[in-house]
Image (cartoon, rainbow, N blue to C red; front, top):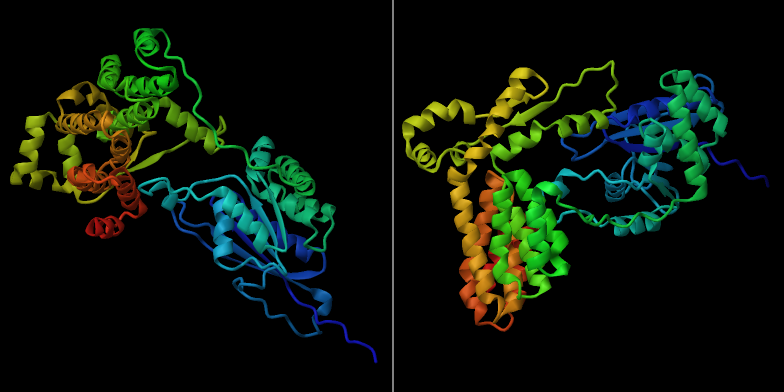
Length: 494
């Protein structure tokens, strides 16, 4: 008895790509590839949202034309179904994780192609602590979940070819053999598009070769490079070499560079002055205090934000990221939403306090603080607005926020110094607790409130043999979520 052939089914492909990566172009290439090689094809897309919280999902189905009875048409789905996707392509490692979360990858069916480079998501960037997803764990999960996993830094390969990442991913797809088309058929689809053909084919070839060769291991995380302070800061370089142990000197150099850039050389010198009492406290405590002190002394205010957004290096970096050509013009729109408190922060202390107390002043400034505004820094009026704010740097030492922060820093350092000799482990956790205080606006207010809650508990922790451990756990709870519930629950149990 003869066996009937299995019914034909659609080939299913899900592509997760961010804006500017050519995901739509790749989807068009695949539709063109299918239609020129005996298949019916359908493509849909669900756009992601702004600020890197999700990519656009392109979904394609291809059905062999020869298997369609005369006068009939196949029914093709509009969205991927978990467990029924033949190929999943992720343009970045976090997007690979999203594909796994959605259940799109199955061990019995899916060829999973992912680029190993990282573009940090908003949840990673806005986390109170280190919110980065562990890349090694994500890669291991991808290998376990897929029938076949192909990975490489396709973004770097595409950049070397002067192309978006899409052609490199297309090359990897061709090399995988997951679709019944020869390499030349993929290349023909790229040529028919007729845009950026040379760069696209070069990136395609690089992606094809990388997929066949297998991916190299992920690079080790970059470490801070040793720095030299240069002739203008030679006096501070000499102080570091003379007054501080070798193990912390690189940290101190980075701190001095940061603070000299933030304010001036004398401010950087005061940073070293503040650390002198901790020279004999041990390398770990001195190094951690030095790192967190540099961050706190360079707190973010409107002056700092305006300064960074009007630097030539920022315009050059953005131009490089968008691959600006000499024939193109670049516009950069900055969304600014200053609160009344942030305006008061950069004013002279007396004027800032008056502003916060005055109902009339608050009413006059309300139109500026009610909603955000867009400032185009590539236009002369927009650039001058931010440049004028950045030019207030010389007045910062008399500002309300500066005086407040210096008083807070002094109190924190006093606690570290007091505990250094008798309870060094607790002193170390107090030094590290500074990481709760960051950002500006609501983020800063929330972090400062959490920091105050920990410092209020310090007298009780000093009498507890497990005080250092508890302080560390409380700080981690404060960083675990921005709602504050985790910290509140732990404080209630202490």
